[in-house]
Each structure stands twice: as C-alpha cells, then as structure tokens.
Length: 229
Length: 128
Image (cartoon, rainbow over all chains, first blue to last red; front, side, top):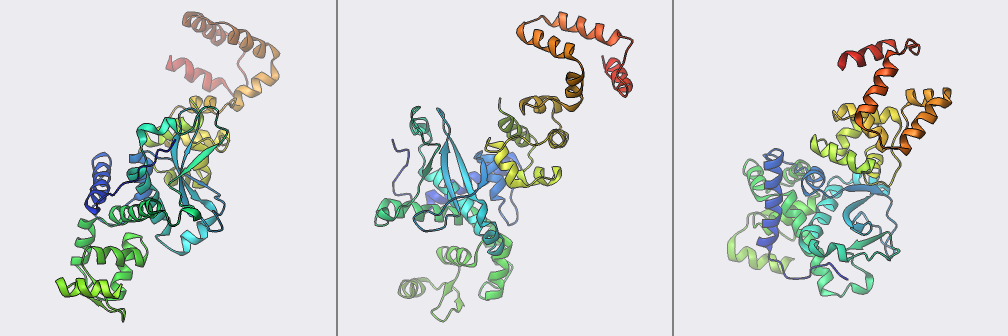
C-alpha cells in the first residue's frame, strides 16, 4: 500500500510548511536570526526523524547521497539515511549534505501520509526497509515522480534560505557581484546554484546569458528570463 | 526500552546534537547515529558512562539497557559462585522492596569489605 501523496502543491504552501518548521524550532530551541539554518538539528530535534549515516548502494547506476526510508515491524518509523561513503563529496562540495537532508525532509513533509504509515509494512513482509519517494528509471517520464522531486527541491530552498534571512543578508551587500554571492552561499551553507536559483525565484536577481548579474526589471526581465532559461 | 532509543530520548531532552555528543565522548558521530537506531551494538562501558555524565543521566540504567554487567560487579560474580547463585534466585522470584532493603542492610553490616571499596561503601551508607 502506498503512503505517498502526489498532488499539486503551490510554492506558497511549500514555503509555509518550511516557515512553520523554522518557527517551531525557534519556539522550542532558539530563533534563527542569522544563517546558516541548522537543518540537521531541525530534523533530529524538532521534526524527530533519526538521521543515520550508512552506506547506500548506487541506484540503477547512479550514486545516492541520501534517502528517506521506513523501517521496523509492525510500526515502521521514518529515517533519513545519509550515504557515509559520500562524506568526502560532502566535505568537498559544501552545502550538498545540508541540501540532501533538506530535500529528504521535504519528501517527509510534503509527500508522506503519516496516518497510513503503519499500513506500509505488513507483519509478514520480509523487507527490512522501504525506500520512499525514489525515482526509478522507468518512472523518469512519470509526471508525479518528477513533480515530487521538484517540490522537495523547492522545500529545501525555502527552509535553507528563508526569505527573511536571505533578504536581510542581501540588503547589506551588492548582490550583483559574483564574489558576494559566493560569500553568501558560504554563509547559508548551500551551493552556488541553489542560491542563484532561489534569488531568481524571488526576483531578486537576473542572470544574463553572459553570466552577468542584473536587477530584476519587471515585465522585461521576466520576459527575458523565460527566453534565456 | 532499547538502549539506542533511550539514548536518543535523553540526548533530545538535553537538546544536544548527535555531533556534539559524539565529539564530547570521543566517538564518531556516524557511529552514534547507528547506535541510536540499533544498527550498531552499544559502545563500551566507559563510553556509556561518559555519555551518561554528559547527558546527566543514570549510568547504571544505560549500562543495564546496553546488556552489560558493570566491571566491578563482573569481578564479584567471577570470584563468588554464591553471588551468582543469589542473583539467579532473585531473578526467579519477585520479592517485596522491604526484603531487598533488609538484604542490603545485612550486606552492609558485614565486617568484610572488599579491598578498595571501603570509601565507596561508606559513601553509599551516608547517602541513605
């Protein structure tokens, strides 16, 4: 029985889920007033999903950084498994571990029907765990699977780069300058592409085909954006 | 309750992250993450005691949950077949608390105190 939820979720709703979790962390622990967002603590201490480091084999020939699984009989619990064999990669490419964690949290928040979790693993099931929200090669054309991935990415951006923190950080610096953005991505512990995507989504910056950073300029910029991208 | 689950609960009550706890007790945080979900066996008695100190938790409770016999008790059990027999008899019966209290008093009144345990024993009595 599936416990996955496939539906259209608006950007505003995704942002609201992320903001709600950040506020809960603020109430229970301490308000987040500066980057980076402590995503590992949020998942571990507030959302209460164990994060386990263990080896994850490649999936259909592709490396896997992290995954969301349900484990245990007869009452399965969710866990986020982070591939411990990718620690060097995570260390080398700062922000990738945090983004992977936030992405899996996105699946948990947006795509898991928690009320039906106990129906997932039947008592006579031999399987040790079930991987959730995984995209298979034969599913690549599956609109739902792609949409789930897109939504989880969106959630990760919203929770790691909350609008208030991002706007406050950008207000103090010249964001039309690449070195500034590289400094910002270090502060938020995200990748440069994650940061620029978020800034573009929020219409805070436009990247020209010549890789120049320019301010968003209403209709013209929106039109150009769609042509360039 | 399982050791790992209890450890995770205690850590969360104290608002300590896995990485912080692991660093404080000198183990790898990836190992701690496995212990908490039961994927790895509990650590050594020394590490468990260290964890209990950091989390301000009951050392004996954690050691028991880990299925370990504390070193000092292990030595007694190895030396004294009667002690083993006593524990076996106790494990087979459900005795009232009063009986345990009387047995403890009797044991504490004994003249023979194990070498090196005198101060600890006296401390126990003072606490009572």
